[in-house]
Structures are given as C-alpha cells and as structure tokens.
Figure 1 (cartoon, rainbow, N blue to C red):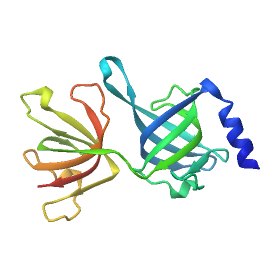
Figure 2 (cartoon, rainbow, N blue to C red):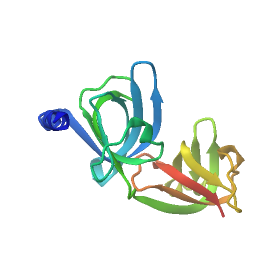
Figure 3 (cartoon, helix red, strand yellow):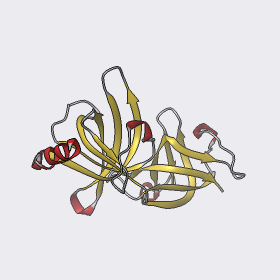
Figure 4 (cartoon, rainbow, N blue to C red):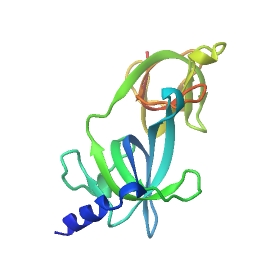
Length: 195
C-alpha cells in the first residue's frame, strides 16, 4: 500500500521531474544524514549532438530503487559503472555538479556500449582522463573519463593502473554510446585493454 502511495505521488509530480535514461553511475557516497549517487547521462542538443550532463542525486527514504523487472533494491546494491534510468527533481542546487532529490532509480541490465580501438595520445591520471587519436588531427581525438569502476588491463589481462598506460600504446576501449559535443568529444570508459 505504501508503495502505491509513493508511486502515485511520483506520477503527480508532472513537469517537475527530469528523466535520465541510460545514465552511468559515476560515484556513490554517504554522510551521516544523506546518501548521494552521481550519474552522467546524454542529452540531445543542437545539431543532433549528445551533450553529457552530470548530476548528484540525493537518495532518501522516499527514493524508489528497483531492478529492470521492478523488484526492490537497496542503495547498497548500487555500484559505480552501473547503467540506470533515474527520475529526479527539476529543482537543483547551483553546485558543480548540481544536486537534486532522487524520486526513482531503476538499474538496467542490458547496458549499451561501444568499442573504440586506437593509440593512446595522452594520459592524465590526476584528472582521470585518457585521450586517443592523432595529436595533429583534433577531429580524430577522443577523451575518455576513467572512473573507479573502469577496469584497465595489460596484454595478458592483468589489472594495471591508468598511470601505467603510455602514449603510443594501442588500446581497445569499451565505452558508453553517448558523448559530449565538445572537441574532442568525451565519454565514459567501462574497460580499457592494451592490445
């Protein structure tokens, strides 16, 4: 009965709700009073370009967390790198990233991803960025966001760190389908393997 009331209240929020589909959980944190789930997701922009948005969801007792079959889950079941659909308030803080109250988070099992193979152009371990492409051709370049959930392996499949990658290494990167409209475009990397 309580779930029905919560879901009914959720439906009545109307235009005050933002829905992010196929968002990636970037980080999960907790303090004494609140829990936070930071997600990144693509938003269609001008010229049919997908722009990357990031928001920190404030997860409270009223937040509905479920799997793709509608079965209840808890915050402890969420992991960085998971693909989710999220519904949250259009009212946000002015912080970077903005914060918003989460109404519902649905974990998606069939995450969509793509593969890119190329040469490492630059590595920024402090910022968590990996660049691929030709240093002389900015339009061939791509910036990948490396999160704590990103797995990086060498040629033999052993785990390595981002700082172990070197310019010139040939890599295969499993990444999100969406990317920013920036030059170079940016997307989230799920796995990096040295070939």
